[in-house]
Length: 321
Image (cartoon, rainbow, N blue to C red; front, side):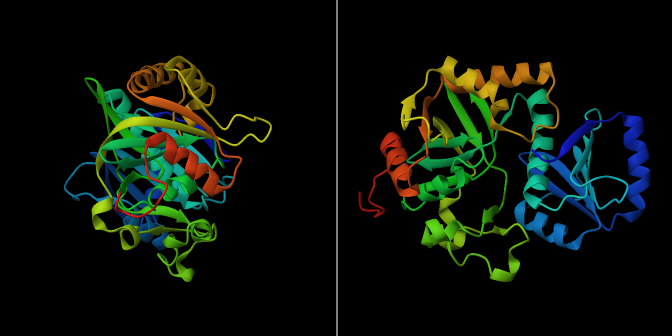
């Protein structure tokens, strides 16, 4: 991860707030799975993208967490200061919206995991006939490509393409999305042509991404607020490994997740205490799901076929089956 997070005290937070507050032009309150996260910035483009991405929150609700996003010549690119006591973050000189929105989700996650026993998963979540399928893993392993590949089947539905929240209810893991629209890649249509044309060319940012309403392609009824998580698929891309798919036990999977910081590079706080509660939550998730590791060294179509065979989604994209 290119950005650096520095934890600060409430006194340092007050100093930074005093510095940036006079420049605030926009204060946008958004709802992220029950948390009111407030964006403070002077950037109209960021304001518009943020409002397309997240659900709005009443201005009468007090914020649970705050994010100041500004340009500041006194600091290097992609600098983050975070006060965990007041849940206030300062993001300075960020050029990539994907990191901003991930840190907003992480801010909500920081609140939820300590105060409400709700934990974050940095992964996509697709529903197939009531069964939730999570795709997570290393960066560049094909999570986004394979997620949208599953959506080509008309009876599959999506909860999240990047990040979701989980709660343990008895034997089940109920999992919830929190984004109104998703931040997609421009090249998605080069793999799955169905997803072309969702965004006008001039709306893509300098990272060739844009927030898009995928309902235009898949239909309004196929974006769900929640599902029950049943299958966890960990993606990797290792050409030297000849194994394409293997089943993992909960203990082996937990060790793999811990080794890779739960495949989440966006945690604002990574203390031993935080790692312990995340490990405890993840153990409960793993004990209630079927777990596979998939090596995505084949073509996207080959990997898609393999994933569908694991989760029982037909290879034929017709809805008649």
